[in-house]
Length: 348
Image (cartoon, rainbow, N blue to C red; front, top):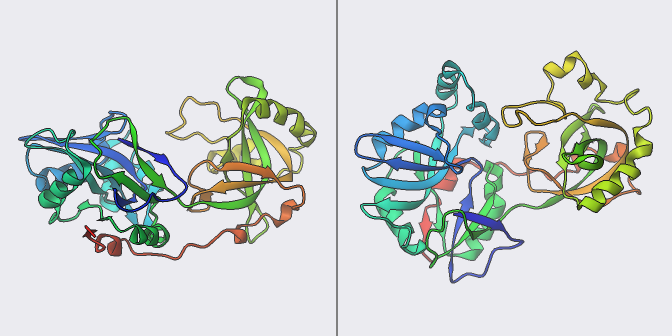
């Protein structure tokens, strides 16, 4: 069961509100003797989280299926980068990371407990989840829940400091609907003015722009790659080829990212860099003279980069590129993960 994006939380009265965790969505199947962790797209995850497999096998009762999120808590809240590092082909590397950065599982729904619960209303599944797993010990947790909309609005602000991604609203009468966007998610929304320093061609060919590469200047005056924006119609993608053409002339000569075209690309996180998530994709990029500025909408940062692709809003011809700095971004007040779990569940 999935969630669709909404601008604001729905009215109180018919919804259960929960924090939106920023991790790997997973369904855990606990049988009589063994346990299986499956990703949202039905891929096995046990080998990447061996410590979690063993812990859940010990803590979950037999014959249960739970839906939830795999997360890793770092010193500054949830650490999605640490999760990505787990998807490594070497078993020895995974075992090392399992000891250094152990994972946890946050349960937020129960699909089977002695009987199939997918046809049971969400509110009743929640009650069973608390009854069966409410006293579980780490690394197994049950996500907090409230019916109080004002509390959920407060969560939306406070919990971001621990790395959470927003708030989910679940219709309390809803059955479990696999693959359907039956829930609502409200995420943090902010804007930033960024330098457009390059682009990638669209997969259809070199008559359309696929994405724009965005940059912000740091305190040293270095232009850092912070993410991409690709929310364009096909007509606009083709128009961008014409608009950006003048900025392609001699773009690499003094480009702040020109070293990424050489040996330094091996160790730098650059726009054309491959990762285990992008294997097989063409991530080559075309430089632009970093003179043009656009305003984008983003949800939150992951380190010094946008966590997700940003949404293009408009060009800002009135803004000089050198004014696009990190210090324009809103600073999130830190919040301790432990306090989130101590929020408990509220039926009010």
